[in-house]
Length: 278
Length: 305
Image (cartoon, rainbow over all chains, first blue to last red; front, top):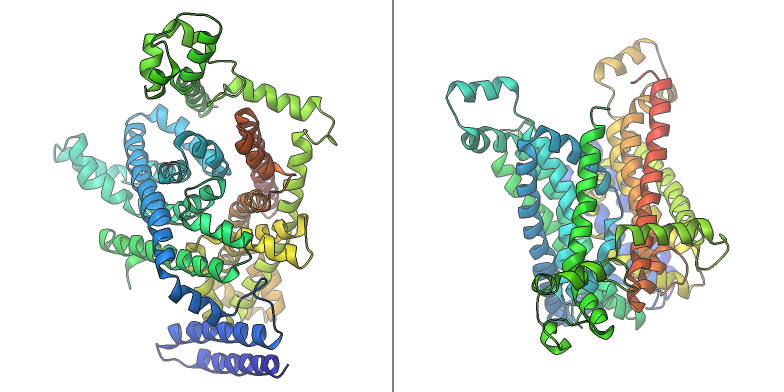
């Protein structure tokens, strides 16, 4: 009970500190406050789990998760390679190539674009993750089926964003290219693709999260004996929740890193866009 | 009307592609069926055919394949009409209390979705109000809310289900919690954006009226946030449905659309998987459509469109 009280005290103290910090003007507040908040949550989690003796099968303490994470790095790395590097990343690359190609073809025909945009928007809102059992049946248990799920999941958001982005160049800008006697490909490469980049990167950023979700959830429908989704579902079955949480930490780190990587490229490619100004 | 013809052509093209893809996908089974029925096929033994691609089987046995792929019991790729018939039989012709009725399974999933969506939306709006009015909360929570959207949250679904199961919660509530969790963050982010959308000029105007804080909230910030809220609600309800479906996978649940898919994939009942998939798609489309309708009516009455 004392630990729980301590947790509440720490919460109150940290919150008061944050309220005080939020009133201050200096720049470090921007990352100091969320960091303190995150650490407070972790500390409270630890203290309350220990104080109330919450059993491991309901909620392991952060320290237990950290120990598991450190001691099981071999398994975690193998799962990471199978699910993220092979499944999610493979599918991501294939899906990007496919969506761009279709978008550029569709963009040449006004008729096709008017048909494809609403249908693509509609399909992007559907629970496409449900195709996972079908694709696992078609492509087998290994990473190929996971990559296929990822392709299907990211294809329509990317397609819709790319097609919309390719319309972004204004009539004035296109006229300018025409006065330069630029051909279709020159206009595409020098004007329309750069102008489409903010849209394309929006799609890509959505796709990073979808790719991870697709690759992990597809493993619930069948996988070899390695992979993050496989480990999560079997560890849940064995009530080894510390392992599940360790996998979730890996997924969170991988997701943030993947997103940050794409956002970093966006910053370089669309340096001219107002959203990137500081 | 101008958009109608192109959409129709694209949809017809997709369905045509689907039928076309059935030839190679179902060729092996079609040739096997024909061989068992006594027809002459090439190559003659199943062992030789195993490693051949679907297309080469199609070209070598076109007559047999083009007849045999359309109405198999367990095709690798069922035909659109097979799925449509299955959908019709399991929704309209079965009693809705029957275990084989998709309406029954759909309702199980849908009720969890709606409960979760309601919880997630209410919590999300409340948190957004807190974030907009409290700077400490904004600085503490907002970065985490945004960062959490880059994390594959769905991965923790099995754990939530099993953990809640071990404390005695079963059925609708665990799935609703996953749904709530998934719809929560889009609503928070969108609502914060919306509540902040009034520009300084409008806020100044309210100050010249000597409006109180709550008047500013009810008469300016809340109405101004509505377009943002509805955009988030559309994302949120689609995410809720995905959450409820995925929530049915890990425990081997026997009821719900996700359970239908899982059972179908265990027993190779492809038509059942596809019909559950389409039922889920129809549910999603209807839910997003209803939110869109409410959005249009609301915004019209507010004079925003």
